[in-house]
Length: 329
Image (cartoon, rainbow, N blue to C red; front, top):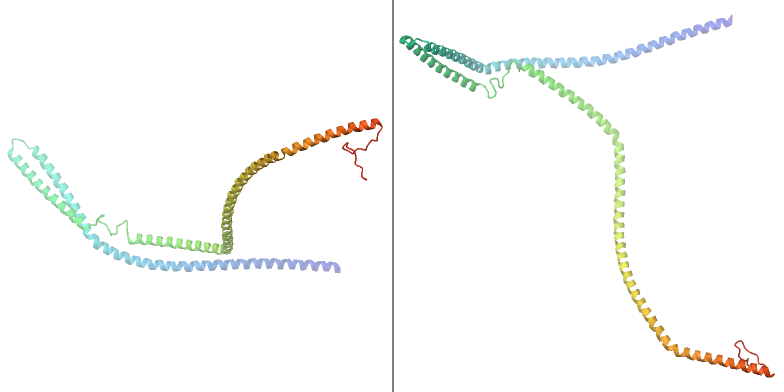
């Protein structure tokens, strides 16, 4: 029983813990939702404030443009009145000229179709033609004068130079200027954002750039030192090359001199050999004669010894060369 009550209490405790956890989770979700709604409300409040400021600015611009429109309409009426009158006069003069031309054409046709035998009708027709021609010339003068007045009143590029019309007005100009200002403002905002991004990129790359600059300075210093060493080595190599050239020149001179000395030495050796041969030629001959005499003496001694030994006399001892050994007392 106690164990069952403990299990029931444990299950009830777990159930209360689960409900509390769910309540906590829902409360956290609601709090996050409230925070998001608060942030959205702040954003909307900022947008509303900005919209109200823009609306007030647009109202001020509208009132200003309305007053400007009224003023420009008055200026337009004041400036365009003579132009309209001159154009109306030109139109009337042209219509009158056309009517007079048609009347003259009718009179000429009637005069041409008049009977040839009726002089009175023909005279009336001729008088009417002359009167119509005079009227046509008068209408031509009126058209010319109206055209000249219109040319004096209107500008160089047309009758509406510098004036408003249904194609151009203060409202259209205001809308165009506002659109231009909006484009300029948007471009300025984009340029500022781009500038901020570039500044952040540059600030992020600045330490590496400084390290690269220091490394470049070290490398430049090493390059200068290596360049100085290379210049010194080049100078030393030039000096060594010049010394080698001079040594080679001296060696070539020494070789030439040694060759000359060797030639002179060979000539001297040949001369000395000939002199020695001529000097010792007599001695060699004397030695050869003495050697021959010695051989003859030896042969005579050998014969005498053989004769002495064959006769029973004493045989003297010989030396290595076949001669009798001398006996010392």
